[in-house]
Image 1 (tube, helix red, strand yellow):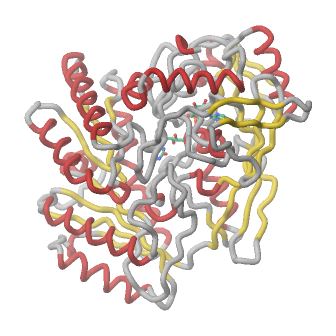
Image 2 (cartoon, helix red, strand yellow):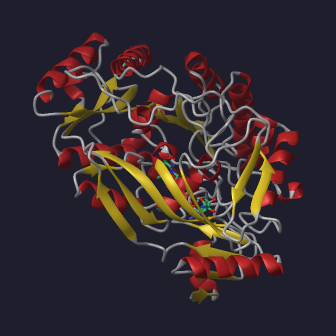
Image 3 (cartoon, helix red, strand yellow):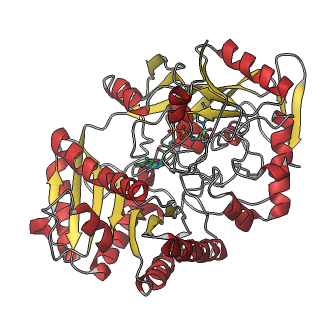
Amino acid sequence: MLTKSQPDEVQSFLADSSHLSGGFAERVVFPEIDEEVAEVLRDATRNQTSVTISGAGTGTVAGRVPFGGVVLATDKLNRIKQIVHDDNGGGHAVAESGVILGDFQRAVESEGLLYPPDPTERSCFLGGNVATNASGARTFKYGPTRNYVERLKIALATGDVIDIRRGELHAQANGGIAIPLSSGRSIEAKLPTYRMPQVRKHASGYYVAPGMDLLDLFIGSEGTLGVILEVEVKLLPKPKGLLSGVVFFSSEEDLLAFVREARERSLANRGSSPTVREGSTDRVSSPTVRKGSAIDARAIEYFDLESLRFLRQKYETVPIEATGAIFFEQETTVSTEDSLMTEWLSLLEGHNALVEKSWFAANEADQAGLREFRHALPVLMNEWFARHHQKKVSTDMSVPDEAFAGMLRFYEDNLSGGNLRYTIFGHIGDNHVHVNILPRDDDEAARAREIYRTFIRRAVDVGGTISAEHGIGKLKREYLRELYGEEHLREMAGLKRAFDPAGILGRGNMFSEEFL
Ligand SMILES: Cc1cc2nc3c(=O)[nH]c(=O)nc-3n(C[C@H](O)[C@H](O)[C@H](O)COP(=O)(O)OP(=O)(O)OC[C@H]3O[C@@H](n4cnc5c(N)ncnc54)[C@H](O)[C@@H]3O)c2cc1C
């Protein structure tokens, strides 16, 4: 098994997209087969050496940043093992955890299939996506990664390997869980007793729900319960066509009214409940779309005025009078594409969009261009943070439907008077926008952190979640305490100890080491 320990070889594994500094590790190991992973973990448990699992390092909360011990890199667990067509036009695929998402999506699409999770940055690994329950723009229609995971093979800290298929193991009514091991022993533990926020997207702490499928415990567990070795996912038929647009507005009121209508019509059209809540049993994995042409967006993404100012660095044709924009996508067929275009135009005109100056795409090359526009913003933000040697002050909260308009106003009211630079953008269809505060010096950074804390409190007060998709990692664990309280963090740590008795895996992720 390849091992690297020279400082210049290890360097790139000590950071991720959070730009948290100070990470260090003795060595990075690159297992190629399951047994090598198990061996690393067995040794680490025996020697009480901490192990940080590394995917592609695109995570934004320092989950894969190590503070000592060994980094277990999944880069060489990179085989796509199977892509199979099912009778229903969809299919399923089996892949190892180090497969790059972009490669996987291309392989699946070349078979006429679709893997919906699409967390903007496609250089991430499938294992990282499962570990963070990643979502993205398409989540508005398709839900997060969780909805597609059918089976996981996982190496536990003790070296035991478990293979769990959806539907096989459930929590007991009293919250007890039991997972049989091949040795004949079984892992027995108690689920934490908190109730997860009832929002459309949630990636804060362990997934817990009454009678839950135990597969869900590992999805979003951020490298703290085991090493995901192999993933089996459900695939959908690839849509025949796609219509997308970046549409500009000169009034925020018009933009928000447009979003409300596009969102409501989409949800009504697909017959799903307005709020597909992460912790509830009405999880809709493959919404059925009523036949015929009607608004049914798969993505509705927001850019505020400051985001557009940022993007003008790269895209000069952003109209000068625009105060905000929406990126939308809707799947089409040959017979619906024209009528859908007409419906979107009429909806846009009804809400006074700057239609003439907006951008629309109906072929793959133009769509890639619009998607690149969407992707450019977080990339430009990340570069800005790195240039100014400032830590990211970036929110990832989502709130229930009824609280979203008030939350957006709360963000704006708190930010506008403070002479701070900021952007608000993201997944408005899921009541989930990212507020990025851009401090230029340490004083502004301190103010930004204070404002951030106010936002956290507000999100918790209105029943929201503190992280909808990026996870908690090492950066947001103090806020998880605000969401769930110390007693529940202790319950989480107790659950972790059942899987990882020496507490070696993902130390410092989700809760601080004092709880172990
Ligand atoms: C420009 C940009 C845009 C982004 N947009 C989105 C977005 O829209 N939606 C979204 O959800 N995320 C987004 N992200 C965040 C990031 O892409 C996701 O969190 C992604 O899922 C991380 O995958 P990774 O392979 O890079 O994981 P890493 O960063 O390497 O690790 C993330 C966490 O997962 C754990 N982990 C990794 N692999 C395994 C494994 N095999 N077994 C167990 N634990 C493991 C790590 O220990 C760590 O805690 C964005 C990031 C960037 C840079």
